[in-house]
Length: 381
Image (cartoon, rainbow, N blue to C red; front, top):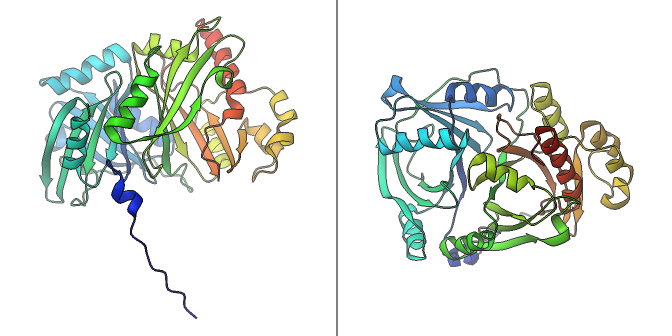
């Protein structure tokens, strides 16, 4: 007998004041987009899929679009600043170094999303407008968030091109790995100034209809020397998750303090990338030159007692310095890179989830102590 499934109306989505389809792109302003694209192709296993530059009409900037599964990174550098946008990008790199300027979100209706956000207190940066080419039409708008970061709202249901109008399909820079390194952006973490975390949580609650997902304060997220506070906001489907961190008063400088000092203000601290095989991911990336934080052997001595059975044996986790955590919904495996540029700012997390929708609370102490060891080497603790 064939079972017939009747799909009920998605009332939760219908009631969502700010529905989203997911992350559209993480957009970086960098000093040399060509070299950045090569690094993320070779070290992260991403595939170059689109390009915009002088060869196809962009006289001011060069942009490279890389993908791995649904994860999309865009790297843009200024060739010659002639507009406000070009000057903004050039000044951003000069002030902050390579960093994220845009956490672009795909939405079903960019005009409605922009209107809702502005009506509820957002600062509009770019009003909704159509952008067209032979592949169709994209509707774009943008609002401001913490620091100089923005959210571009992207409606692309009427578009079949490689990225956006103005971009041409591009050949990969390097041979793609046999297995995809990661398949999606899991979450993007922002660092803000002391006392500003709740303001930005409220912003996402009111402006974008996001709800509070997790909260980490006090001893949850402190070591002997440094501390921070964090709250996580997410859209109704949990496809877009934004932890917001702020420093807390402690004996020494926290990782958030260090970031704010060297980045020159609030911004995106790290991007977590979802993988189905974290061991292969880490081994592949490490062999390509990506440096990951180390944790002491003692972490693994008692790990099995509280995390229980995991897909990856404890000895393999130990060998690869991968962390594990368990909550009421399941477990996760995670590892964090060192900063990927000379400034101790942006870094990455690789995460493999098995039921757990947490963020590795049980690993905070081990992780932050590892970060503190790196801060100490840099003379910034």
